[in-house]
Length: 59
Image 1 (cartoon, rainbow, N blue to C red):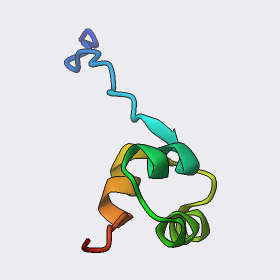
Image 2: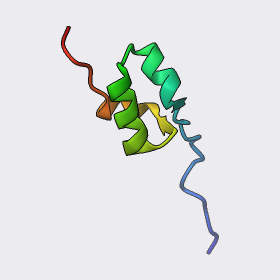
Image 3: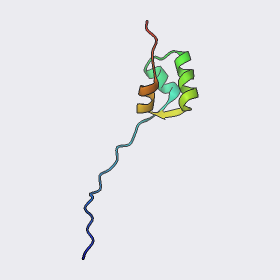
Image 4: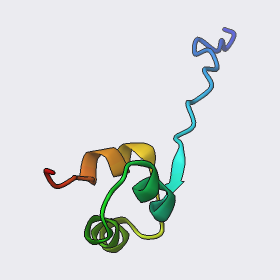
C-alpha cells in the first residue's frame, strides 16, 4: 500500500492588517469611534475585524 497526498496545497489568503489610526483616517471615523476601536481591538486589527466593528454616526 502506498500513501498518497490527496490534498493539494492551496495558499491561504493573507488578511490585511490595519493600524487603527490609519483605518480611522481612511474611513473618516470620529475620535470617539477611533478610541472605541482601540479599546476593543488594540492598536492593530484585520480589515475584517475593523469593518465588522466600526460604525459611523449619521451626519
